[in-house]
Amino acid sequence: MSNSSSVTEFLLLAFADRRELQLLHFWLFLGIYLAALLGNGLIITAIACDHHLHTPMYFFLLNLSLLDLGSISTTLPKAMSNCIWDIRDISYLGCAAQIFLFLFFISSEYFLLTIMAYDRYVAICQPLHYGTLLGSRACVHMAAAAWGTGFLYSLLHTPNTFSLPLCQGNSINQFFCEIPQILKLSCSDSYLREAGPLVVSACLAFGCFVFILFSYVRIFRAVLRIPSEQGWQKAFSTCLPHLAVVSLFISTAIFAYLKPPSISSPSLDLVMSFLYSVVPPEVNPLIYSMRNKEIKDALRKLVTG
Image 1 (spheres, rainbow, N blue to C red):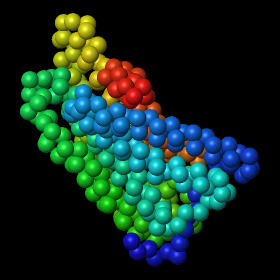
Image 2 (cartoon, helix red, strand yellow):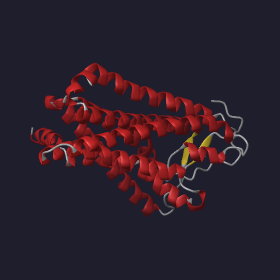
Image 3 (cartoon, one colour):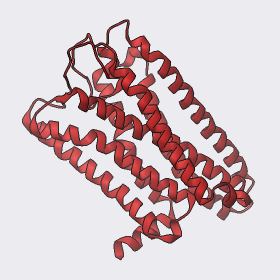
Image 4 (cartoon, rainbow, N blue to C red):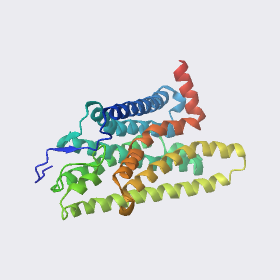
């Protein structure tokens, strides 16, 4: 990744100037990070150890927890170290690595959520074909496709972004490196080189969104035809957690990247980036465990030995 500018490091946004507030932020981030590690770690362990959960839905949920752990581990540890050591800098290569990894995990999660919508569609709308369409080999291939597509997506954007000459300094108004902040530092006539990959990304993201929306339209139409209330509850108990996770993920990301410039501000950008980068890995285990009896039973067995 060549760059004609002389930037060797970037300066991340400081949460506070006072030492007491910096330490307060450190302990807050540490608590959030440990809670995310514990929640997702319990989900992964419960699914791996309980043979009753060796089904396609829980296999994809295990992959989702792995991606959540990866995405939050890319951003929060650096923010914690900056708070505890009272520093702001991140190296050029460190910033590039952070963008690459975060894009990889977050895009893979979006593709996986699309696959999980297909899983719920087949389970409810075509239950007789569930074992055929979502066999173990097919599930592995689909999960690998989500991870692989996320890797290629990240590989498309990161080198292209860091090949732009930077003419606006090296201060990033964010607590981690992200592409929109790097583009703000590029020369006024050079950021257009990122337009092509952004159009491809927008088309891909919109296609996944339409697929998820179409899947849930079919799912809700099928659920409404179920005669028993017990059948309704069983269908909604597996669909609503996934729908809640998708809604949280898409709404925060859309507002963070597509909000009008007129309402943009450093503080609002910071809050929205925190919401889409930290909150989903934190609350996903809660969303999936609160309404899922099988997950709660597996966690209870795991905790009680």
